[in-house]
Image 1 (cartoon, rainbow, N blue to C red):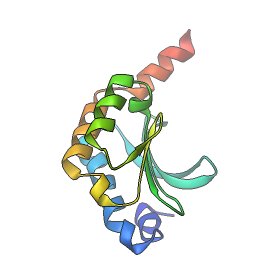
Image 2 (cartoon, one colour):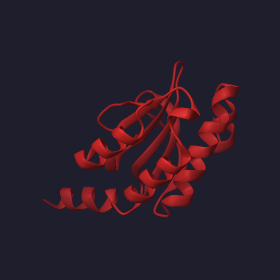
Image 3 (cartoon, rainbow, N blue to C red):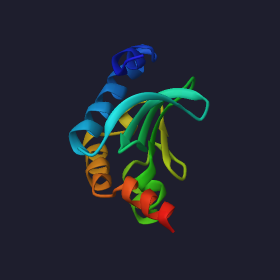
Image 4 (cartoon, rainbow, N blue to C red):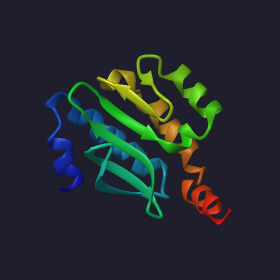
Length: 130
């Protein structure tokens, strides 16, 4: 399955939001490449940095999710964006939402731009060496 096929398999009312988030990730984090892979029992778009998942974009039955590993590893970043995206539901490392209104492009672009400076690959590779 391609990225385009994944997005058009989502409900029609979510496709523009998924496309906008996909484009925001690619535009604001040059360290990642998108692939379709399974995570947590279902296929989603994973954005990998040197084969390590950094972000994930999913369409589920009831909502969409943006998984953000840099946010999971950085409580201050998590708190900042939980405050800036009050209409979304935050978990440790993901943001769940049902529409584009909950994920304004300016805030998403800022989140991804801030996360792009955090190298998940470097962190995980250093952790392996210990």
